[in-house]
View 1 (tube, one colour):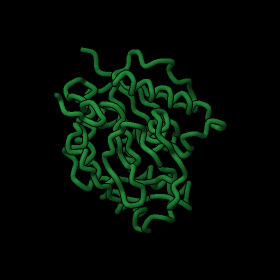
View 2: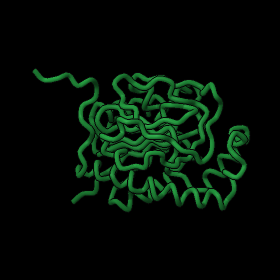
View 3: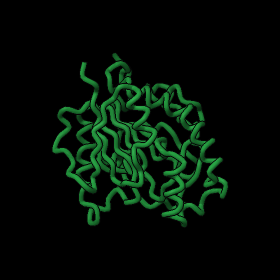
Amino acid sequence: MTAPRLLVLQPSQSDPLAELGTWLEAEGIELHLVSLKDEPAPESLDGYDGVICLGGEMGALDDAEHPWLADARRLLSNAVARKLPTLAICLGAQLLAVATGGQVRKGPQGPEVGVLLVAKRDSSANDPLFADLPFTPDVLQFHSDEVHLLPPGAEHLAASPKYPNQAFRVGSCAYGLQFHIETTPEIVLNWAAKDPVSAACARPQHFDQDFLAEAHRDLAEVWQPFVARFAKMVRGELSPAGCLGTQLPLV
């Protein structure tokens, strides 16, 4: 049997697949990585069973400097239309939001950085990926922009006090996560070194090597099973969410 194949869109070398790739490969998923800065994006999603879109330091609409962002938005929109399981992280979530009618802006409360909690929304109880998560899972935050308005019909799945639109689902199986679940301590320390202004918004111990190592062990306990559920959806073993929107009574 042929392994399910995911298209992985990588906007920046600073945010690789890392742990996410390890977890997906352990689930028997084949990964086709496209570094958007260095190679053209596929014309279509033919031959793929799902899509991953990672993060990056650019903005979701910085097309003048990064014209390939339009290709990423096109592919994410196509993934939603084709009901392909999709996982979009940080910048990826912002690209997914914009591609499907949402709005992204510079976060008015400044950067959100560090190992922090998000809280699930009530709607997550019926979501195939989010239902089994703890109510307030740990996440790794490192962003300055926010998803200001969710796409029409999107399901709001998780929030934080600083920026409410932390996780959402568009359609039946396209997920946007404003936070990171894929990182290693080394990746986070590299971000802090490259962007000390944003890093200064976190508590100082959040960039201590031992603290980050322990935090990533905790992150793996929560998010590796989440990724395993996503892999089951890609393999067709877990049904996507039902139709969104207002459910009218049958007469």
